[in-house]
Image (cartoon, rainbow, N blue to C red; front, side):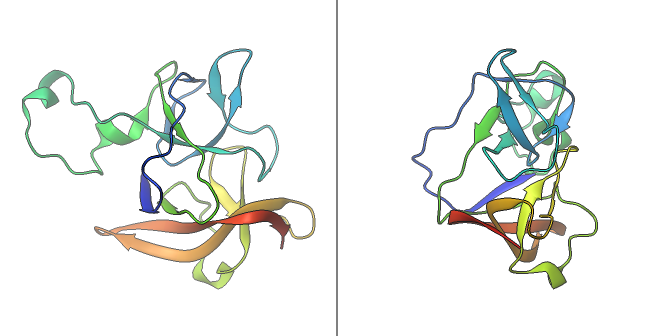
Length: 158
């Protein structure tokens, strides 16, 4: 799940890349221009990250429905080769994602986070990895826990 908390909704999102593997919305990826895919990072990084979103279009039996939760699995799971919407948040934005490492806790508030090879955000390795993504604590959204993240002006290290 990817939840916009404080964002400029007028910003353009990238929508021409396909998922290189099965993934979920809210995961951190990088663009692979050669293959035209969104890929998980090869090593921990806070650079050039995009966050996976998906157009919420009900299909099949779901098309008969009229009210859907943002948490519907069909809106949050992505299959290999499915087209994605990739968000790259500018400085000042705040968003929430459920794609975070299990060891990220409120004790890590104020630390910067980076993407791991599994597409999840975790506390950036101290002194090694710089990131513009500052963890602001865990956030409850309709009974689900999200990592709340603020985008900084410049990358810093923990």
